Image 1 (tube, rainbow over the protein chains, first blue to last red):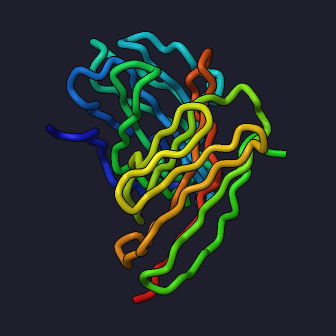
Image 2 (cartoon, helix red, strand yellow; image 1 turned 180 degrees about the vertical axis):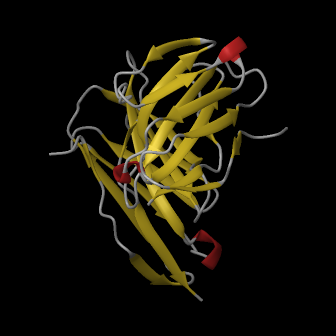
Amino acid sequence: EAGVVQSPRYKIIEKKQPVAFWCNPISGHNTLYWYRQNLGQGPELLIRYENEEAVDDSQLPKDRFSAERLKGVDSTLKIQPAELGDSAVYLCASSLSRAETQYFGPGTRLLVL
Amino acid sequence: QKEVEQDPGPLSVPEGAIVSLNCTYSNSAFQYFMWYRQYSRKGPELLMYTYSSGNKEDGRFTAQVDKSSKYISLFIRDSQPSDSATYLCAMSGSSNYQLIWGAGTKLIIKP
């Protein structure tokens, strides 16, 4: 069974530019998470989807970050405009439900110059 | 003070040693305790999962939870170079399943 797929794996952009990350969860997983992981830190939840509904986005910086999960399958996380402090690894995870084990993708490593 | 505290290391031990990794927490509502392993440039993968207090063993790995002390541990027996990774503890309550993470401990097993 394929795991969580993320692309791109690496992205280097200049500040003020837009960037988008894509995630395809494990088939059948209704719950999808986006996390941000800074160097030497644990993952920080940005947003959680139950099917196509964003049910927990309290940690998402809404002035510059947006996310969508059309049709309740794959998801896109966007930053516009990017700031230097957005440099981090963006992880996508999925689970059968919010009470079940989360499975993580390899992450997208973002560097903002 | 963070809800979950974890020594970032690095912790360097010789191959074959017993490794002890620990986390402390402050929220008594936490009921689910997990250990994730993260290799360099990879996402975290679940290693051990424990509900409430007690011990759980899986091969060379043993997870312990002491809710009275708000302290959890992961023991690795007969450590191997392939165990070199960052180990993250994570925990959640039973009403809100959002994972609260430690910062991770970098473990290095020297051949």
